Image (cartoon, rainbow, N blue to C red; front, side):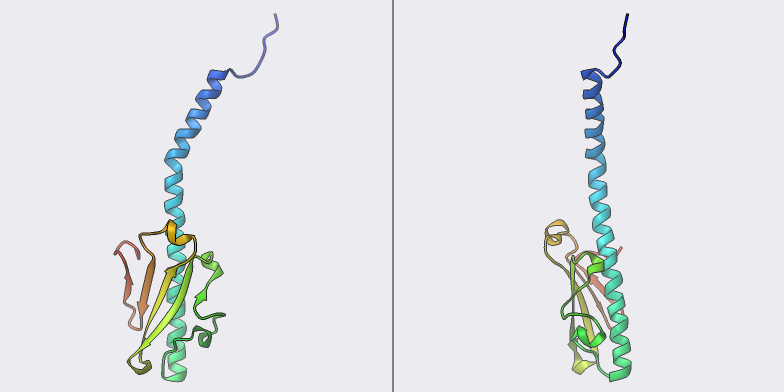
Length: 136
């Protein structure tokens, strides 16, 4: 008597059900990880640009709102390291002795991350966002 080797339809259904349950549990965690990762990249880039502003201030005795003066490619600057998900801009106040840098979500990422759409940092290192959890 020959036995046919293989899987039954019920075994296949059980495997598909297990995969479905795993994907339902894992996918939201993955999306949350991607959002937090993109936020961390934007925050890191924002702090890097703040350092460039300070270097510019030492040389010029004023801050600049034109990010190309800092050696960046565009104004506003969109960094490909952040996946192009954030646009960086600068505003200057107090006759060039203060600045606020802003990272704002762009493109399709705006719809994906509606909680933390804007990050800011100023000349004294104060950080801002819509929620305290955004910089965490």
